[in-house]
Length: 216
Image 1: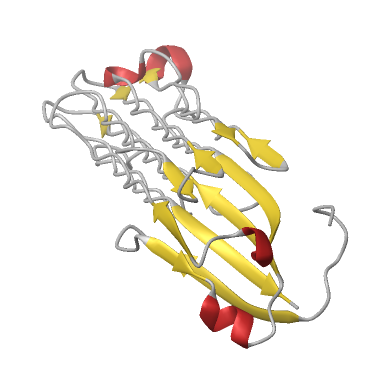
Image 2: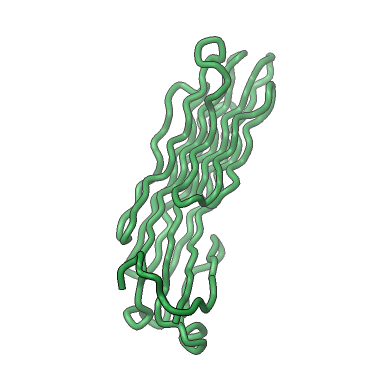
C-alpha cells in the first residue's frame, strides 16, 4: 500500500525510546492491526561552546528521518529496534554527536543516522543526519553557524530541526547563557553565548525515537 494512500481505521500509536529494544506485533494484531506507518528518527547533536567574548557556539544538527508503510504480515513476531541518544555538550569544546543511528528491524529495515555536534565558537554549520530504507528519507536540519556577533549577528547558533514537523532545535543561549536543549525528537542543541569572561557551553541534542501508527 503506498505511503500516501489513507489506510483503514486507526488502532494505536506506539512511541519507542532509548530504553526499548524490540517491537512485538502480537498485541496489535490481536486488536485488528494489519498496517504500520513507521517513522524512525535519529538523535540530535549537542550544541557547541563559546569560549571567546561576544561569540555564539554552533548549533548541533538534527538526526535523519526514515518513514515507511509496512504490512505487519511481513514482519517477524519480534523486530529489533535501537534508538540513539542525543549528543551532549562538552565543557569548552564542540558538541558531541548523537550516540548512534536509530534503526527499526532486525535486518534493519529503516536507518536514521545521528546528527553532528555543533562547532566550537560557531566556526561552521554542521550537516544533519541522513536516513535510508524508507518510502521517504529526510536529512535532518543543519546546525546553524554561530561565531562572532559583531560579524554574524545574533541569529546563529540554533540547533537543527527534524523533518515532518517533529519539533524544534534548541536556540542559542541568552546573552551570557548556555545553549538550550533540543525540544523535538532528534533535534539539535543550541550553542552557548558568551559575552563576558565566562565560557558558555551548548545545550544537549534530543534523543531519537521510533513512532509506529497502526491501522486495520
